[in-house]
Length: 536
Image 1 (cartoon, helix red, strand yellow):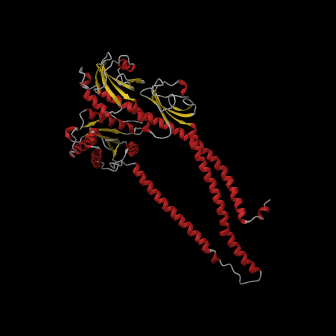
Image 2 (cartoon, rainbow, N blue to C red):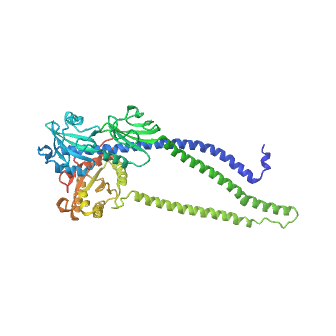
Image 3 (tube, rainbow, N blue to C red):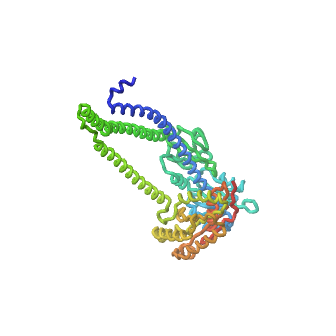
């Protein structure tokens, strides 16, 4: 059966052997390609679900921040005043800090707006609003469904917090949430080829991606989606095209986030990767065939012919015929040198690539303006240090610093001066990052954080006071600031961590303390005094 093979040339037999191996490897590769395709489609769907969860998390955080601020607003003396203007100054400060709020108002039990900020807002009666009645009935924070504001005529969500005296409502503080801000927040949370749709509990569109039939204020039919309110599904609603839909709940409103992407786009992306992989495999097979053909000629057939020629001379009676092996060595030596040179080049390229990746990683983890760690690096370090302190059962503290009235500083002195101010504050904060585990980061526009592993609340508060004093000592002129110079409000929180602790708890506590410092008059340090020890 093998006899015909012996009549073929050496190169032909090498090619047949390579073809047989390619068939075996190709069959396995086809199975792997199909598996990779399915994995790519699944990964894209899971990515949509992860994106929906991240969008929902950002919006839930926004609603939580609104609740925290309103719970503080109802305690203000101005919220209990009967004056039409008493609340405007403190409420305007709230609007300056929380840019997603359109207005904040005090509403009497009869539904009349008694005081509102900004001053240009129109005072109307809200007695028939369901969210207003719900706040009075429950005595708790309430979010509305989609509505049209009677003050501005624009689509809004409303948040209400009753002011209680001896457990009974005396008035209600109401804030309107700008749907335009929610739309921008949804788009800024993630980027990519997907549509983001926000719905309230009644299926009314809060934020629209522009798909047919999804204008803001439209109430979608119950059959528009296959599943709700969380998970993955498919729908042919809107324009008849099949879309993969990822859902995540908006816990505060009872609504949901839907992230949609055309199924054909997901499959096309997966198929493109498959074609690239298949073509690469085919190209490698062709290249190998050429190498076998020309390599056999150069490194096998030519030496064999020379040996055969010398053997023929010797068989013909020429006893002086010899095989000069020195004529072969330079060829194999050149091949060895070529491989070594190739390996050297690849090693050098690999080293350059690793160095470039390291530089890119450093750039990706550093805030370009201040040189401090950025929010991404801060989040990563927070998780690492939380796990480390959990293993050691050691405390961990967080200092959050916010430059007072920084927007006013930028408006008065210009963005160049604002950038210089940020860099000076960053340099001050960096000076207090003294231990290997400490991390100073810029976590927002004018917000900075100092992570202090294995540091208790008292020590962290002392460091925070030193930071506040150091910023004040810089004496950067700020006519609209506290005392005529740049100052900072600082929140401090500490968490004694055990296995199972959540790093976000520390961030929320420090953020609440920061808001307390702002509400307390700014240019001060506020500590979160609640017990934050968590157990697994």
